[in-house]
Length: 108
Image (cartoon, rainbow, N blue to C red; front, side, top):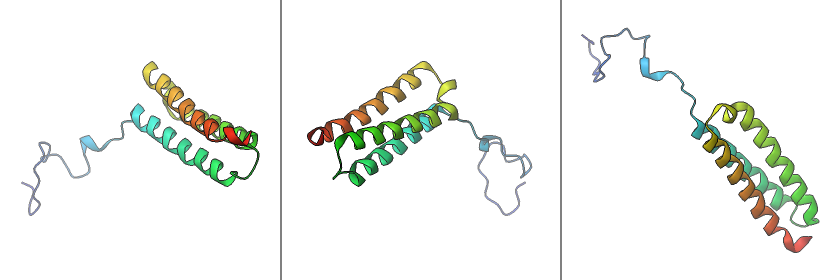
């Protein structure tokens, strides 16, 4: 049936161009994880690049980066996801921003 190929899929009788399970299905955890990872990298970079500057500069830029990442993830798909994903995204992003604020407390 499949020639020399070893196929152990239930849909192996379908043509090669049709792969039913290979379609992209967006899921909220992918948008959530992307937002959290991107924010983490950006606010960490802001923290270390501006470590010798006034803490307000670091807090302001980290807040701006957080808002931009949140807007990007909201438009990307968090808006259509369930309320728990929306709340989790907001809470975790606020927590990460809070860690930056705590870390810059001695420079205020």
